[in-house]
Every structure is written in structure tokens, then in C-alpha cells.
Length: 115
Image 1 (cartoon, rainbow, N blue to C red):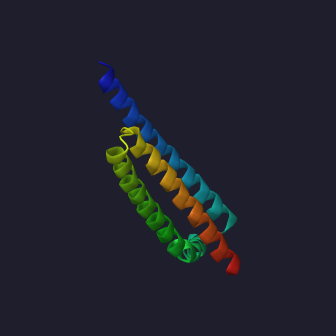
Image 2 (image 1 turned 90 degrees about the vertical axis):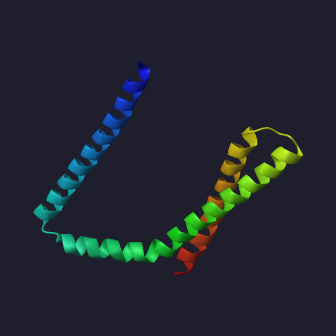
Image 3 (image 1 turned 120 degrees about the vertical axis):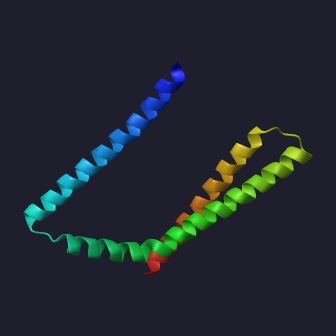
């Protein structure tokens, strides 16, 4: 009997989060309209910032995917060679994924500092 209750709670939470997001976004937009700010101006500024950071976002996800793949490869090798067990897969994914994000941080901060 716990299964259907858990599924209902998960979906209800997702719907509630979506409703709260939409209500907050609507209130924010109404406040901007009251102040006289054009939504087109705001979207233009947002697009300019996103286009500037877009290559860095692609770099982040590329590094993360590559390093998680390397972590899985090393975990598989360690599991077969050293017989360390299945827990090494999750641990190596976290370690190498974290390493990828640290490397991305240094690359991104250097690039943003140079601009």
C-alpha cells in the first residue's frame, strides 16, 4: 500500500513545485510591468548573457561526461582486476565527476578573468 502513496506524493510535489514556479514568475513579470521595464529589454539582456556563457556550459557538460566515463572505465578495471566490489562504480563516478567540475571552474574563471 505504500507504493501508490509514494508515487502520488512524488507527482504531487512536482506539480506543486511547477505551480509555485509559475506563480513567482508571474509576480516578477507583473512587478517589472509596474516599474515600466519592457520584457523585450529584459529578454535581450538575458540572451546576451546566455550567449556569452553558452560555450562554457558546453565545456562543463563535456568535461563532466568525459570524466564520468573515465571513472566508469577505471572502476570496471578495478572491479575485475582487484576485485574491490560494486561500490567502486558509484565512488569513482563521483570522484571523477567532481574532478571534472573543479577543472571546469579553473578554466572558466581564467576565461572570464581574461575578458
